[in-house]
Amino acid sequence: MENGANWTDERVDRLKKLWSEGLSASQIAAQLGGVSRNAVIGKVHRLNLPGRAKAGGATSARSQKRAQIPAQSRPASFAPRTITRTVARPSGATMLKEDVEIDVLEEVQVATNNNVVVPIFKRLPLIRLTERTCKWPLGDPLKEDFCFCGNDSPDNSPYCTYHQKLAYQPSAERRRVR
Image (cartoon, rainbow, N blue to C red):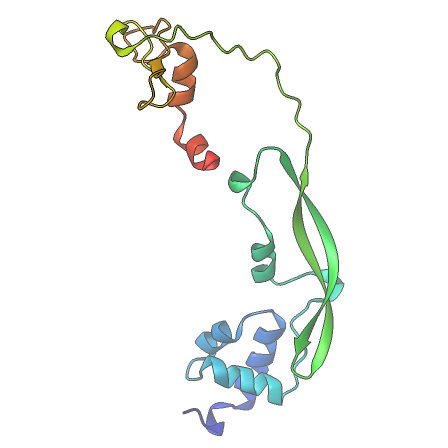
């Protein structure tokens, strides 16, 4: 259990400085040493320290990280835009207004290329496949109309060029599709 002897004037000044810099109670406790996170929170409330909102609308690095969405996890048809919102949050018994920057995604209209060519499948049964035919399955294997693409496959590949593009995607694209 922490006692009052840990809070010297020097440690209280350092607590005030770290708190105003936006560090969390856990981070302050680790830097001060010898006090717990709860002791820091208690001391902050006893000192009636203001919330950690910065003047001019800046937010702590922690809240900015939470609002950002990594570019690689964004859908391709969305573009980021930063907006500033004023929010109220409790700090002890008082409510503080704070400007928060939020990254939002706007939907962007993407022009698609209408020149996509889908080949006409030969629809071959299993017994008619060779080393040079596409083995891409079409339909349900348990149904009578199940067949394979059957188009020519280059370089001893199991698939035609159209189905190669579907089957062989870079690993980053596969993760994005999921």
